[in-house]
Amino acid sequence: MRLTRIRVPELPADLEAGPELVLTGGEVRHLGVMRLGAGDPLLVFDGRGREARAEVTALDGLRATLRLVEELPGTPETPQPVTLAVALLKGDKLADVVRAATELGVARIQLLVTQHADVRDIGANKLARLNRVAAEASKQSRRAVTPEVLPPVPLAALTWEGQAYVAHPYVHDLLSSHLHWDSPVTLLTGPEGGFSESEMEALLSRGAQGVVLGPRILRAETAPLALLGAIAATGV
Amino acid sequence: MRLTRIRVPELPADLEAGPELVLTGGEVRHLGVMRLGAGDPLLVFDGRGREARAEVTALDGLRATLRLVEELPGTPETPQPVTLAVALLKGDKLADVVRAATELGVARIQLLVTQHADVRDIGANKLARLNRVAAEASKQSRRAVTPEVLPPVPLAALTWEGQAYVAHPYVHDLLSSHLHWDSPVTLLTGPEGGFSESEMEALLSRGAQGVVLGPRILRAETAPLALLGAIAATGV
Image (cartoon, rainbow over all chains, first blue to last red; front, top):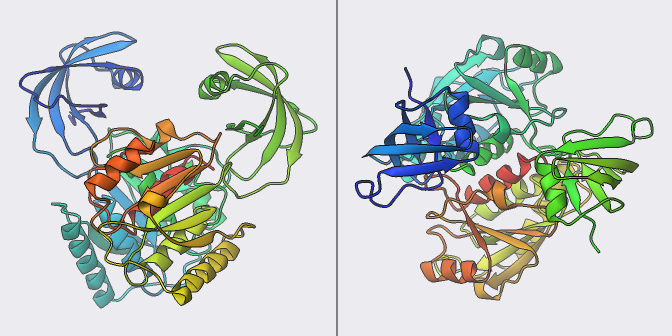
């Protein structure tokens, strides 16, 4: 079983000296949703790279007490892997997306062939170059993980585990209201011109969640960074 | 007096036919914080470009009823102007920042001279070029407003009205918990190497709010887009 991992406002500076943590508000509701009770193990992280194993010692609807068991090695990685599934783009735009997405913590970049794409494939050399860009960006941002850039698949053939989000112009759902860290995350972004109507319908019917990204028109290379920025600003 | 402007989950398709709106949760608390009561006017927007004048008809701690008075012309602009105050960057990086920031809705870009900057000034030609980039990006994203790119000022000479936010590695405050739309917003981002410690202290002591942007190291040109993306993902 994968441990529930929740973000806490703060971890005590010295975990040995202050091994108890009291939570209120959203985190308590989240523990309830995850059906955790006294004695259950979980992971807590502070959004600034520190993480610890913990155990629920008491829980009611308003308040939870956790015993902090031990600090884990800090990591700049997201609590669950984030995949960016991005349509093929013209020219050097994909390199820019790969570079910034790597800084913003993606674990994997899956290229997509979509209906409106003006690029239908990518050569082996170019794919190798994108992987080099990811490796360099990973090193520069001091991540231990180098995201892999995977060769393009047709959108209909894309599969995902966990949550999938796609920016949608006609919904009012916020990414922050849906996102949770109990399962992997996939962000889908389209080509210049966007996903077609039938592609969008297919994604939603397959369980992707439409989310709002403001009322302006974003370039295909800006949308993924906006979604990833929104996630980074939650402190993961 | 500037009208309070709140985001609502949805506006009725036909404002003439369904002129009442019931709010619960966060919006109701926000109305309370703004000390609004029955009879007070306000603006509501749906985060997808629609906006309306409204009036509070009833308000208790849990629930508010608004009468929708009239629809206003839709706008892709943020409810309050957003200024990006960004350090001078090398090469063509500022053009990329200006382009994406314009798409993401900034009203103004203020260039900054900072301690760690490896660029100390910008020529008139280059500034004119950045303004052309902003004008083109504004047109492409169908905005009516063209952000002005203002010549650099020393960080200490920067003034702002309303809220200011700066990404800070040692705080756990979320941008989304602090941001509100009752006053203009300024986002501050540093050069490669970041703001110096004394610069950061000065900003915080002048009232800028430190916010978390995840545990990874972002390039100077990625950080502003991450902050702006986080705002766009709230639907403004």
